[in-house]
Structures are given as C-alpha cells and as structure tokens.
Length: 192
Image 1 (cartoon, helix red, strand yellow):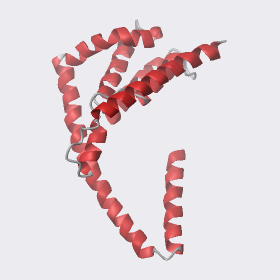
Image 2 (cartoon, one colour; image 1 turned 180 degrees about the vertical axis):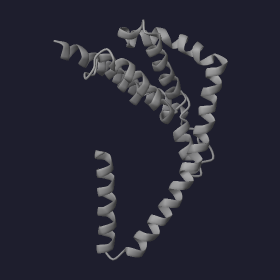
Image 3 (cartoon, helix red, strand yellow; image 1 turned 30 degrees about the vertical axis):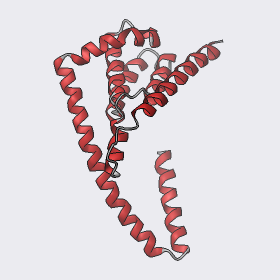
Image 4 (cartoon, one colour; image 1 turned 120 degrees about the vertical axis):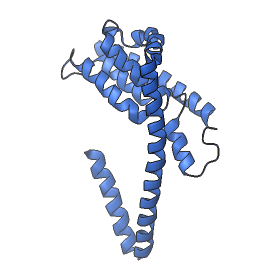
C-alpha cells in the first residue's frame, strides 16, 4: 500500500511539474513511449519467465528438484535448525532457494510465502529467527542464472545479456554472506 502511494505521488508530481514548466507535449510523448516500452519489456520477461517456470516444472517431475533439495538440505538445516525435522517446510525452502538460484525472483516469491506460512504456524504473530533468515536469504539470494536481469538487458537490445555473470555471482555471494552473518548476529543480540 505504501509503495503504491509513493509511486503514484511521484508520477503526479512529475506530471504536474512538467505541465507547470510548459512541457505538456513532452510529458505526453514520454508517457506514451514509456507505456510502449513497458509492454514490450513485460512480454519479453514473460517469455523468459515461462521458459524457466517450465524448466522448474520439468525438474520437479523428473525428480531433479528432489535431488537438489537433498543436496541443499545440509546447508539449509544449519540455516533453519528449528525446521530440520519438518520435511514440508524444508521442501518449500529448498524450492524457494532453487528458484532464486535460477534467478526467478517472481517464481520464488510464492514458494517463499508458502515456507513463511508454514514457519508462522509455530510462532503465530511473531517473526522467528528462522523466518527472518528466510526473508534475508530470499531477498539477497545467490543467483547462478540471473534470468530476470538478462531478460531486461535483452529487451533493451543487449546482444550478450549474460556477460554480467561473474559480477552477479560475486555480488550475490557477498550479499547473502553479509545478510546471513547479520541475521545470526542480530538473533543473538536480541535474545539477550
């Protein structure tokens, strides 16, 4: 809700300022051009998202998602020790991490929500340390294949949309590491 108000306010202020400055035709032209670019970007991103959602479904049906979940389980059990015995919650967390690894932030969101809902059953109305860790890991996720960013670059006319991989890997590894350390530190500080 707050973001809707902020974005609406920014648009209204921009349009009013443009009109007061005597740039009405330029504002109208920019609005039409921006709308056209937004539609084109959405279609490009939808195609890439559909492709990777299909890949996720194939992984799920072929059993590869279960194998990936088992591969991630030792790390995830250390990050979420309260839920290491809860297979359904750990599977939801694993699916969230898998989607984030493929750069599918939009697809990872419902999986993260499902994991958070399962976690919330143990501590209703309170964000547990594990739930805070989930939010941190989901927000600062490691991305092996940044599909969303690549699709935006492709839509903008980039011929090599994946040439940013080393920078993405480094930045996402650092952000996740710092986020996990901060979550662990704050969980200890607030328990005292």
